[in-house]
Image 1 (cartoon, rainbow, N blue to C red):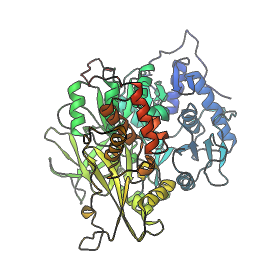
Image 2: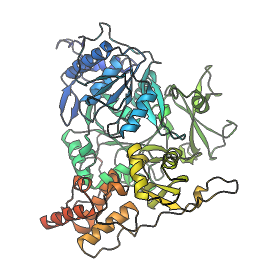
Image 3: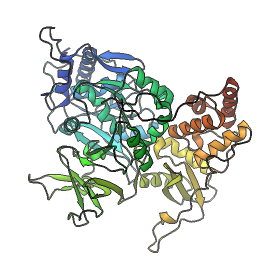
Image 4: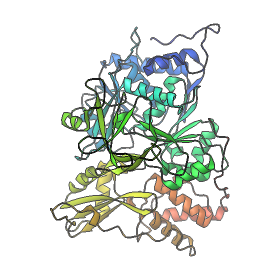
Amino acid sequence: MTTFAEPSAATAPSAAVPSAAPADLLSRFRAAVLAAPSRTAVHAADGSLDFAALDRRTAALAGALRAAGVRRGDRVGVHLARTLDLPVALLAVWRAGAAYVPLDPAYPAGRTASTAADARLTAVVSADAAPPVPAGVTVLRPDATGDAPADAFVPHPLDSAYVIFTSGSTGRPKGVEVAHGSVAALVAALEESGAYRTGPGVVAWNASVSFDASVQQWARICRGDTLVVIDDERRADPAALVRLLAEHAVTDLDLTPSHWQLLREPFAGARVPRLFMGGEPVPARTWRELADTGVDAINLYGPTECTVDAITAPVAGPVPHLGEPLPGVRAHLLDARLAPVAAGTVGELYLSGPGLAHGYPGHPGLTAGRFVADPFAAEPGARMYRTGDQARRSADGLLEYVGRVDRQVKLRGFRVELGEVEHALAALPGVGAAAVTVHEPAPGDHRLAGYVTGAGLRPADLLAELRRTLPAHLVPATVTVLDALPLTPNGKTDHRALPAPAAAPAEEAAAGGGVAEQVAEVWRTVLGLTEVEPTDDFLSLGGHSLAALRVVHLLRRRLSVEIQLRQLLDAADLADFTEAVRRAAAAGPATARPALTARRDVVR
């Protein structure tokens, strides 16, 4: 088995990230191993690995993959929980010469099987003996070992690094294939822009591996940073998450603005890492708060098709904005004829540069429609990506986000094609027609609302069916049964005329009343419902992890009780959770936390 030799003490390079590191990330990983083999590379709930150990484990698994027939250009599924095995497997797939395809174990088995089939996997790395992949796909455990090839694999810039599947407007998710050169260009551009510090940092891995923001997080071990893998339990518990970040002295945290709202209170009085905020627009109120309190935060914008991030801005000043393109990225605001729009005029945003993905494998027509010829490039054959986002340039030249030209939305950091959810609803037995829109029962609280026609339909049954086939972020919070969908004059569904789900009571209503009444009121407020029953289950009513965090937050404010997120998610129903709240109330009041204050000693 070939691993990277440890240098002698007399010749060991500095522990700092090499300034003249090779462009591809595998070569940079080799340099990081040689520079500081004993420095911690990965922390996870099940242990830690230094760079030398990470090198050995990834080389062993890469050898096993090669022995199983994986060759350059193949695709390997990675079906693992958030443990040490996950970054080991991703690096090993690269070292074997293949591209990884993330298969989140939290997704329904049918969804995973469909993704695996579309990706045409050669193998899958999984801790499960029989993961939901097509017959004939080789399954390897993450601790499999084999002899690595004598010559270390050096990827060509055009070699595929990963294929991540995103929501598709046709009803099926589509894969986005990204090259090694694009990932290396992303890291180099974030370094040049100052988003990454020059020396090694401690980076929290917060995003799902099926979400493209994860690439920007886990791949930083290739430049010598220490990676802290946040397990699912602490990821869903704000107080525990903040304690974990402090325990490992995390310097960089990537998260959505929605997630930050849940971390504000636990972070109060504590040191805040540098925040990389992306996945959805930063609300004006959040932007002003971060800017006024001196929290070190960077706004990141970029579609999956442009390798995670393309435009960045420090969160500073009074008004949210996208900022300026990263080094090497070119941004164009164009009209329908691909002509540049005047300053201050809204246009569609097109991006070009080294971060552009290969396209959508297996969908040449779709690729050609989104990746178009770049008429502004000097080099022949250059392409630009049509983002579907509308933007304009402010008076001082900064890009400002305006909206979408289609029906794609961002919810809690996930890209959602409303058409995919409509297709899934319409395919259910008894449904005549379906429509889906976004409802905002409270400022900043966006959720999917489904509408169907058909006789004898029960919304609870429809939602239960959807949860068997769709990941949680694609399941509507509510389904409303209508006699008919409203139509425009040309016969198409009039989404703007759909009735809003019944308005939830005001958040601070029912400040009095017993524990049961107040717990039920909080459920109604957070879930946007008019009625809940003692036998109702939170998740079956459309609850998700961020909604659960909001329930815990509101009960803490109203009843001064210390409720753990796990108590809500594990409760059999509303009555069971109410008993947990009563026990917590009897145990004593929660400790008050101070408000968020300015912190000028943030990590730089």
